[in-house]
Image (cartoon, rainbow, N blue to C red):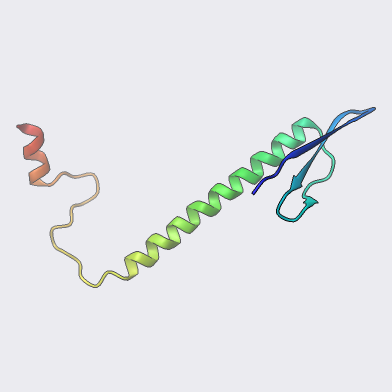
Length: 89
């Protein structure tokens, strides 16, 4: 999956467009370098957020499969006695 940037020299300066090798079309109009950077930043942040949400959905689905909760689960940020003894030794 690639999104190469095509550049064109115009009287206004360099203009950029983003090409999608998936759809074989441009996915953006002509833009300046600053606009291209903003476009890429937004696109990458959107992809990162989608990955985080997918991971969260997977974790929730796995948690819903748990049928038995054990009493020896530790609280967040606290050490078990065994962990503490290993540190003290």
